[in-house]
Length: 182
Ligand SMILES: [Zn+2]
Image (cartoon, rainbow, N blue to C red; front, side, top):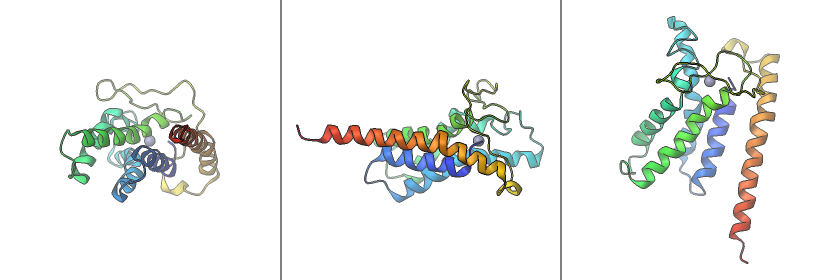
C-alpha cells in the first residue's frame, strides 16, 4: 500500500482542486482522513481475518463500492446543510467518491501484497493494474522508520506526488488561459 501520507495528500490536493476557492475546513479535514480509512482493514488480522478474505486487507473496504457508501455517509453526516439528492449534495458525494476510490486504485499500482478487490461485493477477485511502479509500503507500526519504508515513500513521490502536482499545474494553466480576456 502507499503510505497514509500519500493517500491523505492525494485526497486533500485533489479535493481542494475540485472544490475551488471557498473550500470549507471540514471538507479539507475529511478529504485527508477518508482516503486513508480503507487501510484500517488490517485490524482484521488481529481477529483472524485472512488477507484474502472478503473483509481481509485490500478486500471490500478497498472497493469503489465501499468508497461510494463512505462518501454518502460522510456527506449525510457532515454536510447536513445540503438537501438529500440535491445538486450540491450529489456533487459533493461525487467529489468524495473520487477521493475515496483513489485509495484502491493507487494500491492497484503497487508491486506487493495481494491485489485489490475492485469489484467487491459483486466479485471478490483481487486485481492489479498491468503497470505497477509504486513500491508497496510495509504494514505495521514497528516498521515506521526503516529503509524499506523510506524507499516506498521515494517511489510514491516519484509516481504519485509529482504526476499529481504536474496535473494540477496543467489544470491551473488551462484555467488561467481560459479566463484571460481576449
Ligand atoms: Zn490500502
